[in-house]
Image (cartoon, rainbow, N blue to C red):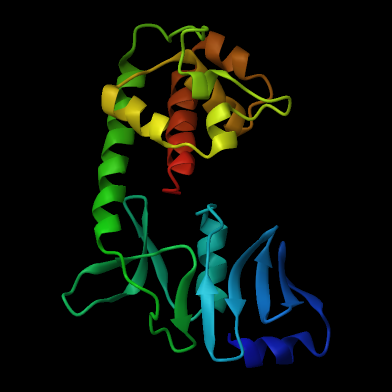
Length: 222
């Protein structure tokens, strides 16, 4: 799809549903493909489009971009790539706000070094989760835990989430600092209604899965 085709589909409307939780929306300067509350594609009348996961690198986001965008996204070891190769035959990592033409040409700067960073972070996350799975007992949350993980606002958001600080997460991975507050944050983020029960039951596979997904989300790897 491009701006012209999106205009034809909308038939003069400013808002049109095109899929489950997916809408075309006419905005000032572009037509957006909105998934839930995120514009994952913005179509411009000059024949370009910008692509974005909005930080939610889910299967549905990838499917919608592949269906309506001009590039093919695929995932390898938790990292999103654009289905084209640069002149040095390097994989091209997907970047939020990436600008492409309606024939799939990538117009924005390609940051190949980011691939190495993502792979490095994924290795650290996997190592961290393996360490959690091997603990004899889970650490108790306490006031000595990382301040960014421990403190929350009235809506339950951690201090790290509020400040958008991911440095403390990376330092935990580097130092293999496993603490109860981070585990509870991961269980809450995963959607468990009673995370304390999951923690006390030591449902280790659920806990490890929640921590892995939470860390990937915090570091924008998924």
